[in-house]
Image 1 (cartoon, one colour):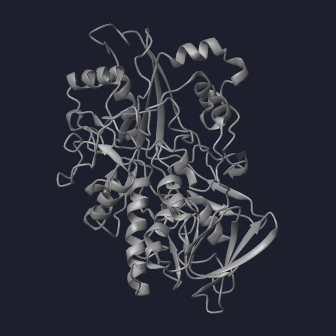
Image 2: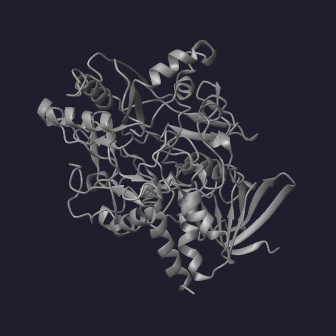
Image 3: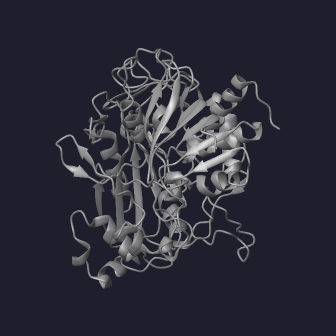
Length: 525
């Protein structure tokens, strides 16, 4: 087997898989190195106990917080990356998200590109990832977006009732854009069945729009693309000048392997990508590869997120609740005289009793939650997620020791707008009554700011920009200090905005792919 390729991509999640998919038609030889294995299709894929209590698919790695305490990050290393387990919410960044925005807790910096630069790629990504939605209902839309190719997922009765309740308060709830392979007109033959095991689970039916099914699996039969699982990249080596990556060093079950490529693209995830670069320090890059700016690993962000659960007096007529969202307060609450961004609200997936146990085990061990109680609670829950922007702070950073120990030094910030939105959501649920019967006339909520181990939506550790003194990557996501190194995961983000980052990662990987096609003088074959 050859060890040299035209392009080597490290990581097979949304960014890496999309880049490979974009470049494959050129006929260039492409190698994808993935630390995880192919996820088995098995009954445990849909088992709440296996997924949430036993955490069968979650990494066993330990990271450390700023106090030296170990924790297991909520991340998954499998072919296809974390999108295999995500909730499939796929939204565009807003035009204002690309600009400098003042928050109560500081400044969200401008990106070196605009919405116009990503707009055609967003449209392409929405079609490829089968995003179901409806234009014109979200008050933060630009107004010139093309219609969704796929219609919005219909609301279950309990969710439709909540939508009406919010509308009576003057809110403008809208259909949450979801990437699912759903044919609502032909439910008998639809791949997606709107089951209770979507977000957090791998889909046994392969009905979720994820990198595994939409990008990686179609590449398996293409002769110029090689996918090698079980390869954990530990460092990149360069020539003496430090301008070119010459070797990609992997750990495998069989020992060390070395690979090389004319172009190397990192897409391992915001924290792992930073770890690889920091661990690749050499004489030309003493502080870590591409780290002359001292920005590698810094500006780590992962959203301020609060999960809220409303328990109602009656059972809910809801099996697929994650179809509704609210952006009325995304950039503030003028009616209340609050002019700083607050964030986004969306309904969460259906929670079984064991899902609930897994979510609360940090303060209540699962063994102490009776199945009957947990099951009853699950039948009466509407769960919601409040997402607010986490601002980039240089001291919020990923660090790696000589022995490979990973430390995430992080302090929560910019919480004022987030806390206001949580309170507003709580207040909005008062008096929520279905006119047919009361589904939540008497309810209570428990809410919790998701802790450090909830590392979903991590981003920002190798941000892009025009100034090599303050950024790691240029506008095309190429490292300023190297000629053949790119980054196409969430590391490139300058700011976190307040939505799921996946659609932006896919759109940007398409954009970078087109840049590379032009750079290589390649054409589709």
